[in-house]
Image (cartoon, rainbow, N blue to C red):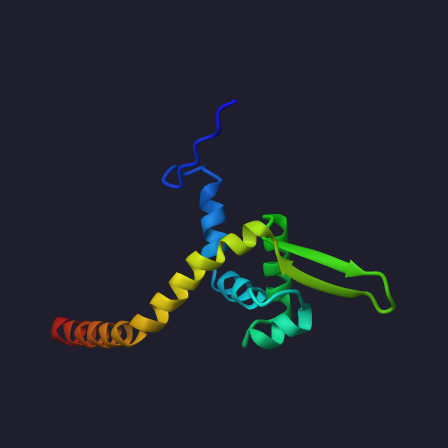
Length: 129
């Protein structure tokens, strides 16, 4: 049986939705936090500054649906739930770490470029009036 060819340049290719998922800011941060091992929801939320409970829930559910995160429920009162990366999720660590490293390495230059662009836009707007 032949393997399907996935092409994210094709509009209806499901790989586009996967790229949306793994390129999402919360996914990048949650996967990075889970690199350290199995964590509870509250531990993930504490580690990812600024993520709301709703957004973290949505992110974890989507990652679980895509097979990147495994959710384990421990039968106790109250139930304890922990999350960890699957093998496929762990395979994302290298690429996501490279993106994170790139962002932190180039952030100063990006901020400088934004400032220059915004100043030029403001000058152009003034000149147009």
